[in-house]
Amino acid sequence: MAQARSRKRRIGMQIAEHATGIIASLLFLAPIVWTVLSAFKPAQESRQPPLPPWPTTGFSVENYATLNTFGDGLWLPAQNSIYVSVMTVVLSVIVSVLAGYGFSRFRFPLKNLLFVLILSTIMIPFQSILTPIFLVLTKIGLHNTLTGLVCVYVTLQLPFSIFMMRNAFDAVPREIEEAARMDGANNVTMLLRVMLPLVWPGIVTIALFAFLGAWNEFLAALVLMTDQSKFTLPIMMTALQSGRFGAIDWGAVQAGVTVMMVPCLVLFLLLQRFYIRGLMAGAVK
Amino acid sequence: MTSIAATSAPTRRKLVGAGRRQWVGLLYVAPAVALVVVFFIIPLGMTAWMSLHNWPLMGAHSFIGLDNYWAILRDTRFWNALKFTGYYTVIVTIAIFVVAFPLALFIERPRPLTGFYRTSFFMPAVIGFASASLLWSWLLNVDSGLFSPAAFELGLTERKVNLLATFQPAFWSIIAMVVWKVAGFTMIILMTGLQSIPPDLQEAAMIDGAGPLARFRAITLPLMRRTLALALILSVAGSVLAFDQFYIILRGGPRNQTLTAVYWIFNQSFVSFKLGYGAALSMVLLVILVALSLIQLRLLRQPEGVD
Image (cartoon, rainbow over all chains, first blue to last red; front, side, top):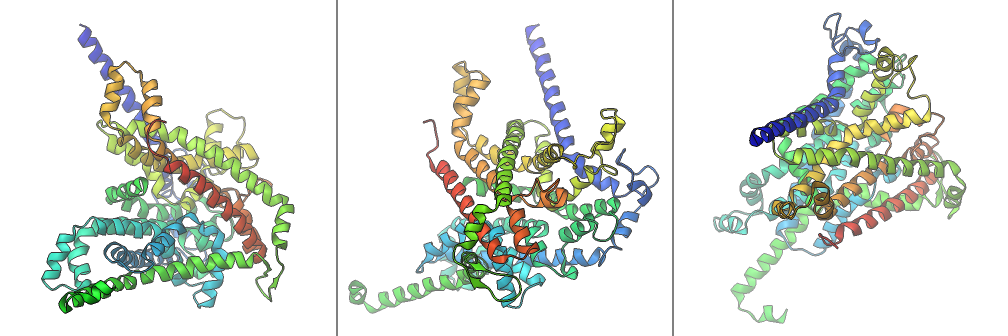
């Protein structure tokens, strides 16, 4: 009797817990779902409050078409964002893999000083050095170029990604390296053939963080990209939302926000464990 | 040195070879160091240098000593921005922890669907602050948005209330948006701390008859101090530097009441083009942030465990 009652209570508890979990999940997911669904309403319906969130007068991609008529269209800023993000990923991976390998496997003068120097930049907010960055980019002829923006983004990624990569290389047993060296591998083949396959989870993690960082960054792009043809998606969408291209079309804003969110969400869902790994690595340091 | 010279030739060659191989390490780290020097160290030095100048965007700049700093002392709008930033930081940090801690406790225990819950809570954290702000600027819009019309339709308000027109509702709307966006991130950090607590400690306390609240206070909190400090650092540093949401959703309004420190520096440097003055403001912000980080790092350094 008593056992049955306590089992009943336990089931009741479980139902209550899951009800809480589901309601909380819905609260967190609602704004995202609301936007993605609303973006598919016809333009006329988009001006009304999104109640209900899904299209009631027919499914339409009109909002995406409208979005494409503002300024330089949707494709150019999307292209800029893709270029900046992909280049940031490629360069920050190359630079941090080399540096991580260097800091992990060699002893050279000033090594510790340089490592601390790179890591300590994480304490300095880049927001406070944007003006000189602008002047430096002007000096080396990279102002108002996407490449200049990439350089800045890569530099901002370095403290985290070099820390990650050095730890990844540190975790590779020295015996593996010594065996490869016996077989006559030099430094470069060692890195490419022997080490890279062993540290690839770390590489996926830093690539993911670099992509999300570059894709979502706002202030530096706002300050450094003054030419409309160089706008990334967040800058172009903010210009649209501030009424720079005339009356604000909220349907186009929903479409634009969807375009900005979806790559992040898809990448995260695919590579979730690498993201969490990165956070954990940051948390235990 | 002499001992190396004294050893036999083959050994020496091996050592020299090893030595040269070691130097190669410098080549591997060179690109990273070059980037950090060009895009971080030099700009940092320039900020300090420019803060001592009258530096317009066009035309010559002139050395004016500490005049920019004296001007900051009299710049009430900057102090108001700083005060607002501090107020926002305190409120939003508390709000984030109040939401994130229960979530962390909720997802830490394995049960069916935990993976789904964790992913859902975390989803807003991977979209950018700019996307989130644009999204919420629509939800908060009085005519085409969600909140005001929904409240009106449900009969909660007599008319559609413009949430962004006055300070209180505008401020709390931003808090709600930031909590929605950041709580999942803080939750994961706190979860790593919770998972590092040995389960037998909790069990032992349970056998000794400690209730859940007592266990939380005596075991969970003290053992999580490092993780709590880290989550605190991330939250405080992020909030002190807040810009995107106030720029995109509120444009610093209503009546310039939500200008943050970074926003004010942005205005001075890139709207008024007072680059020297902006640099001096940046130095002040930088000193505040580094001081905050150092204080919090000290908290982090203290050994884990009960005092």
